[in-house]
Image 1 (tube, helix red, strand yellow):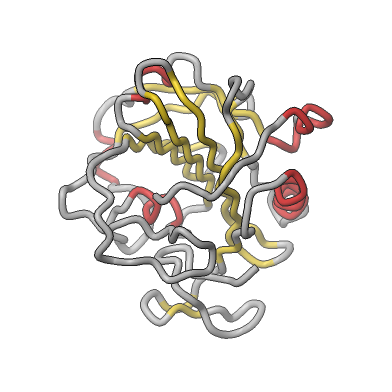
Image 2 (image 1 turned 135 degrees about the vertical axis):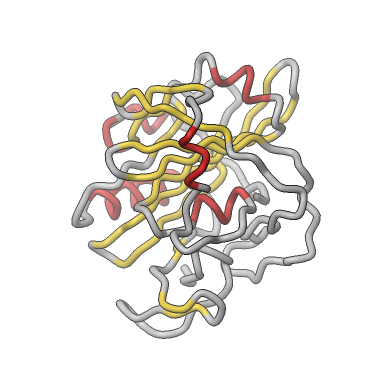
Length: 233
């Protein structure tokens, strides 16, 4: 895997412990496998679980029929994983094809904001003014009851940082459109981002969506399907 910047998916220079992005300065590296697979998922769970503080790899659980894991990623060095990313794709009767992306990150990482297409502030996190209002919804994540706020997406927001091919430079001129819903909340001191496309699919998923840490699923992981290539966010 080729390390990349979590905030722009561009290349980083340097070695372990001293990665640097030309645009964002020193950053922990983003690692993404070329394709999602059972082995890649197990490797991600192991890396995130052996870090200084366990970082969950969340999956919608149970995964519905026809749904598959399509994207994986971690941010950080071995023993210091600061974020995980899990993408799933499937279909609903009303919305057709649906993509779901879940990001768990330590504050300041910037991975979730990049996927949402938001401009990065000093913290690389969600706009703080969001939390002045009541949360829009909540879900269960690894046994936690997490409150979530809807993130407004400006028309001139940055395009997605995730390129079609892991390790490739992303196209800042790509038109991704206002096609998604983005929710964010706090779980055990980390940001939890939930991105759904198309935006309308959030209404169907919201009532039943629950997330489980893949590390807690044990042998049930063999039931998970995998597909590619990863959707562009």
